Every structure is written in structure tokens, then in C-alpha cells.
Length: 238
Image (cartoon, rainbow, N blue to C red):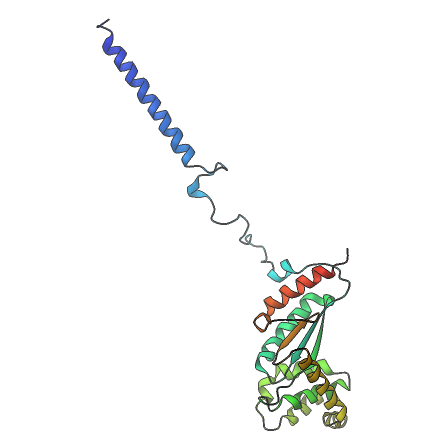
């Protein structure tokens, strides 16, 4: 028995070493893999597919978030604006983009709210827009006034510029000139201003979405889209 004792000890030691090695490998494997069987060191940091596929056009975020629904009535976007107001000038292309993007799902309405105490040419610009309305060219004049705001805003007399816009629009200049000074045009602008004041408008631009006034800090492309999308979902036709 003593003669075989060294061999027995060697066998026991070998069995113990093999057992320890197997246990160690099993621990490393279980600690190095996730529940999905993917090594933790190579797991992606973000969801697969969140980056654009090569050679594919990147989707427009607005198109991904805009509800593509048929609505019972368009969302009405009402702006109280001042043609000489710089923030209104900055909002102008945003509203144009929104109008193009949503199509017949929105309706844009403009109300005059000239801040005459700080913008010396705001009122006469409003008169120009309303005079153009009398010849069915309100929006065309509206666009020119905002697009070229810096051209006339600080002039002592912007009327010659507005007359040039009228000629560009093929308006009857004599009628346009007379309408700019008419009581009817003045009354329309006053009515808009009084209506806005009664609804809590104190500055420009102030925007309402279906009678809901947007906070000033939300009066931007992101805020408009968010509000419009909520209202479109409410108006969706089953």
C-alpha cells in the first residue's frame, strides 16, 4: 500500500487542478457575456439602426413626427404681427415652412398688431398690406414686406419703397395710394389690434394655435410643430 501511495497523491492533485481550471473558465465565460450572449466589451452603446444607412437619404425629422392623418378641420395658426418687428421677420420663413410642410392640415391667418411706440414704420407697412388686400394681393405684399424688412424699416419715408412693391405686383398704383390713406384700411388695422389686446396680446410675434396662445419661448419651429401635432391627433378622423 505504501508503494502505491505516491501515485494516489499525484492522481488526486491532478483531479483537483482540472476541477479548479474548469471552474475558472466557466466563471470567466459567464462574467464576460450579456444576457444576449454578446461579450460586454463589444455591446453597442446605442440602438442598432439609429445612424443612417450608408448611401441612403437621411429622413427629415419633421416628416417622421408629423401625423399623416385626415383631419376634421385644419389647425388654425393665428399670428399677431408687426411688419417692422425683427422677431416677426425671423418667424416669417418658419411659418412659410410650416405651411408648406403641413399643407391643408393648417390654415395661417395674420392679424395686424403694429407696435407704433417703438417701430415708426410699422403702421404704414400695415396700411400697405391692407391696401394690397383691396386688389387681392395681401399675401404677396405681406411676403415682400417681411422679406425686405431691412430695406425699409429705418427709412424716414418708406412709402416710395411700398409703391415699388405695388408696381412689382402689378397693382393699380393710384388705387393703392388712395387705399393706403383710407379710413376703411385704418379701421381694419385698429380692429385687429383691439381684438389682439382683448385676447392678451402685448407684443409681437404672438401666435395662437386654435385659440391656444403659444408661450413666447415656444414660438419657434419646434414649438409650433409640437403644438400642431397634438392638435392634429385630436382632430384625426377615425
